[in-house]
Image 1 (cartoon, rainbow, N blue to C red):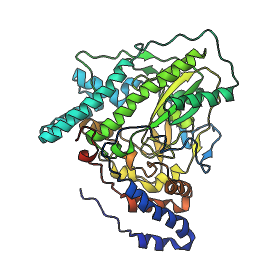
Image 2 (image 1 turned 90 degrees about the horizontal axis):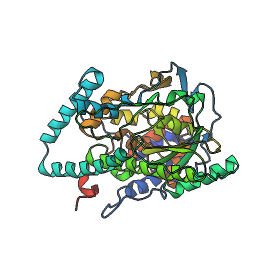
Image 3 (image 1 turned 120 degrees about the horizontal axis):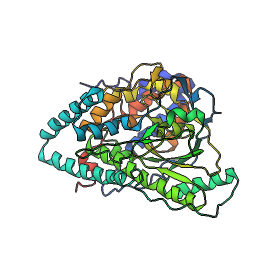
Length: 454
């Protein structure tokens, strides 16, 4: 399908603003030229590294901190209708089970079988170079997934809780444990309380098998009951950004390795933090990526790390190309407050993730409507079957990387993020992003960015 070209020139765009918004937005647009040029940095010899230089440690002053409100998760209104969720019904878990057992029954079975068949046809038509790329990418993804396998339920040996307990005021303990989390590599840290309001986002049954690449003959996950009331009071939520430049491949092997590598790293970081907390004399339990008691997105929102966007992903002020991980504990902590940086209104007018979604899984409706996940909420529909099927066939995180917020910190983007909180000019900001980054951003190319290409 041909992609429409923007009919907005820089001159026409600025002219339509008038004097009221031209100064601030004109400054942002001018700076965007420099940033867009820098975005095409030569990747020769570039290696994955910490993104700490790209994202600040503290939220900008224009981000609002919200008091927790009954019936809301951050800026998202909850409408009740609780349905506790079995983690084994998650799309990735379904893919592992269905492909290993050859069970193609029901909606998940039909969607996964069609996706497997499409992938087989896609691979069969590849050139020899493309097949080599797939081999490298698969090896790197499987190397990442093997970490998940070894972090599966009851496979990690926890260090004993120290007999001597470090006692500190909750505020001091919170500040210090957050700093330790950043020492180990966390780029975002927040704390959420595990209370009755978060009950919809604690699984009723968790997984016991830690793989997302595929099962084995006879594979079965018996599951494990997750108790309520829950034995831990606080959830430390950390976030790390995927490598944005390689994730901008949007789909395929280059994108897959960016996502998978960050996911496996995020199995290691919470183990560090769990062990530290237990050695301070407090119980703690890490949440490896493929073996969680809780849903990471809602807890990230409750911990003040972002808002839920149109795509269903949590969008931080620096974008939605972020992977979350958690440590559960009873050490005394001070919960953070949810945040509001204008995302809900921005998502109404942007729709960039929906327009770019290759599977058509994201709603293009302007207004949020009543949708059902684990609880009814006001949001935008997201078709899990379409999304998962496409990811099986090709790999994808297009919605995360095309989001206008998914950019490193800079003076330009600081201006843009501030202006994005101003409802009257949000449509204009979308046009700025489309002008300088493209309504349909060009994917990163394998030959320039793949680590195995020489």
